[in-house]
Image 1 (cartoon, rainbow, N blue to C red):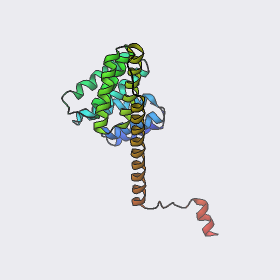
Image 2: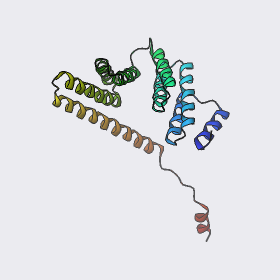
Image 3: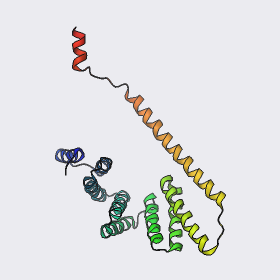
Image 4: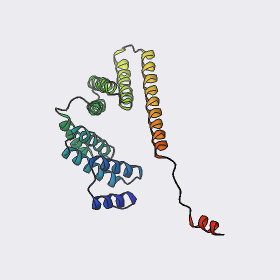
Length: 212
């Protein structure tokens, strides 16, 4: 490991082992820093720590991200292994947004295999779960796949599609996205105001000016 994030990773672990959520945050920081080996290693640790902490949904979510990351790197065996792990973790867990993400990935696999019926079924399933749990990002992904699959069906079966309904659904998703982002920004501002102003220590030059 090299780089700032890797150094932070090592230093934090030497002081005290990180909890699963903090380990996942560290993985995300490594991803933004483009330290991908650190990112993957930290996310694997987060998945293990979530599972040990009795949080199968969070562990499955991490496993799905790992599956995607290995897939885009053309490591298909690893991608399949993490996907299977996510499915096993979610087995017996009450329905949650992560079930929707699993269905979406299955739908993408069906689309790649030209199984249009299965792809459409999975896209609808993912979209329904996304709406129940307010996951607008997943809903947008599912809608895109559903429309793409249905467009393929249209070209094959000459099945009519209601363009107005599609547009209404896209607009509704974008509105919910904006509302979510606006609420998050408002919460950040409230936290900043509650924390009070930041007191800046004078630098050496300022101290010197006061003495003159």
